[in-house]
Image (cartoon, rainbow, N blue to C red):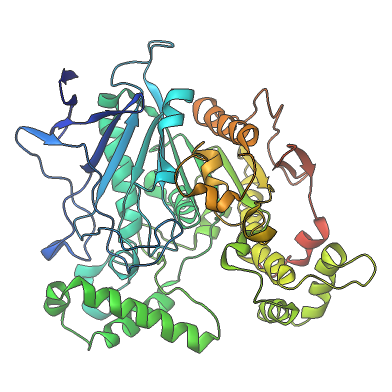
Length: 509
């Protein structure tokens, strides 16, 4: 590495990059890890990045993947996007070896969430500065293709030239991690100590990467926040969705599809989502990874049940009130019954299990919305995460589980421990603009943020989230089912809410 007045310079395989100093760390942004997926590369597997001459400016973030405006947790206004979106960002304490021990540093590669249809790696909540300064960790955040551009299985309609397009977004993630493995030493990172992590769709992605045979040995550890091995489609469903998508576009030829404006693709994918939601009577996202081919040969649940990815230590967990992110005031007990009725022939029996915990001690009545929130949170997030841990336990895999229970003070207490609320705690970004809206009034929860952040640092560095603040954090097994409760007072829980867990046996796998 050399240094110039306007920023540090590093050399990677494709050429030199100039970054910038920011808040005591070095930032290199907008780095291409694959060739632009444009023109003839649209709907194709990612190809290696092209080399460049001279020093490439890496001081500004690249555009997000194409997405509709107004979507996403932290992006309520349109964000700059472009099909040329396959870039990543690196935050490092310095590009040389660590001053602490003279060694290369552990690396954390973060995969953003957003239902596979929105989000970007440059969101301020994902700022890796504290990981770098407090934990001496190199942090990488990535963009990947979303929606139909990343997850529409067109091959059965348009031929083998489109064989990978049901999983191209996942292949982008693999390409990004491979680029990091090959180049992170230039930024002071250790390619043999890579941890991948993500939340929501990012956690689904982490789980899929664990299941993929081709990723073995690519990363050392994994963190999955609010996401398990579900949210994929089998080949038959992928073919149906692709047909609906092409129909919305007027059934174009392959050449016409490759040439049409990306805005038309975004509009068509939105119409497909609406169509499927109306047909199912509920919200239903249509573009998830499709398995059933060489890259992801089976349902990820079956692959992990067979032992894939079980050599990689995993930290996983969920939030207490995941679905409250989407509001609880408009949902009543009938909404909860509707959720359960899709899964069991005796919805009232399952609701009674939840009513015993949530009901008023005197009347037995449940506050409007919280029954649906509890049932939906378990069905979509908590139980799938437990299933992932159970599959791994069968192979003696190292797995740790948490439950984030800190109640936000926002929205008059109706936010609870909502989906994604844990992110600024894990990154220690509770002071970043906009986070206060989700935390609510009062003193910032600094002590909890420090404790959670330090546990994530410990896992990334040493493969064990135990810390002085949290104490010993044992592995999760089906014998004792120990879960670390992350709240104002943190502590271990043994098989929290077993009745609710058991109610889903044979229903959610």
